[in-house]
Amino acid sequence: MNNFEYCCPTHVVFGKGSISKLRELIPQDKKVLMIYGGGSIKKNGVYEQVKSALDGYNLLEFGGIEPNPKYETCMKAVEIVKNEGVDFLLSVGGGSTLDGTKFISLASCYDGDDAYDAIMIREEHPDRVIPIGDVITLPATGSEMNDGAVISRLATDEKLPFHDSRVYPKFSIIDPEVTFSLPVKQTVNGIVDTFVHTMEQYCTYDVNSPLQDDWALGILRTLIKEAPKVLANPCDYDARANIFWCATCGLNYWISLGVVQDWATHMIGHELTAFYGIDHGQSLAIVEPRLLKNQKVAKAQKLAKLAREVFGVNESVDLKAADIAIDKIEEFFNSIGMKTKLSDYGIDAAEAAQKVRDRFRVRGTKIGEKCQIDADVTYDILINC
Ligand code: NZQ
Ligand code: ZN
Image (cartoon, rainbow, N blue to C red; front, side, top):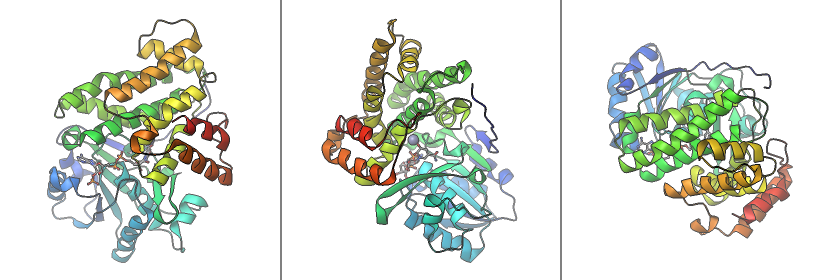
């Protein structure tokens, strides 16, 4: 196992009725900006629960953070934070709202001209941040228990990630009941995102980390078992709770401790979202099977273990078992209603492959666990998508 350090300062409050605990989590003297998305929280009762929990607080609001949160929108919230002297940010929504809030936290403390360029490109982060708490409403990103965020810039069709340990949420309220209202498409996106997060951290090469492997494979097994239940009955509390905890544990870094990570599916998927606007989960479901086929030999041992321990495959030859695992993963995605081809979204594979290759060439991109996926390998992967 490789060396590692781990410190997650997030106070997790999990379970039904948890939103009422907000009062215990935010000091009463704070000037709070509640940040939300396109309005789902006003339809499913979450907005009312938050307002009533924070009755009497000095509470401002900013709505309109879109899926794949945009820099341009976040900067409007930054103006409010600066003008009003806000000193606590409360994100109420999915991963996009929380990621946007993480960016707002940093950008509100930055005084230069172009906060995107400073934070996302030059990685010159300000020396302080505004503290964050959240009510997370969509199981997918794990953003509620990690220090990452992904921000898009409309002006340049870019979508890039950043990390900063100071934007770990101070607390995250995870109430599975709030996910009863999720559209099927978002439930499925979240399951696929969680599946692929797990793969990015598990499916590289062995460094003798059996506990992390078992945690990762346990997440995959749980997703496969619980997914049909939430699709059949969206108000199945136990299944929703299990899916949510899988999503949180899929990217709270536990399964990545001391192991080698990949993340190439995500980096290629982000480009598909930036160019074509498809959802994050959709982009991953397209790239993952073809990337795994392309990298099958390097990943054979882990894929074979997955085939045997998750899908119960009885095949002793690793490369053959790896092939079966990849097919089973795509079958699982399809079985929950997720499409896995670019053509399913009317996107021309040759055009997409060329656009992403050109961009990766300019950036000198090399991704994957051994930096083995460059612009040309990315082209080979996408042309088969
Ligand atoms: O905007 P509202 O009206 O709230 O509606 C949202 C949005 O339309 C809706 N929704 C959320 N919770 C709901 C709900 N509708 C009904 N009931 C609820 N309880 O769902 C739609 C999608 O929301 P969004 O926040 O965009 O989804 P998700 O949580 O999947 O976040 C996706 C973003 O996270 C990034 C992605 O790249 C993408 O930008 N990621 C962030 C990561 C991180 N911070 O660590 C890692 C991930 O790999 C991912 O890249
Ligand atoms: Zn993801």
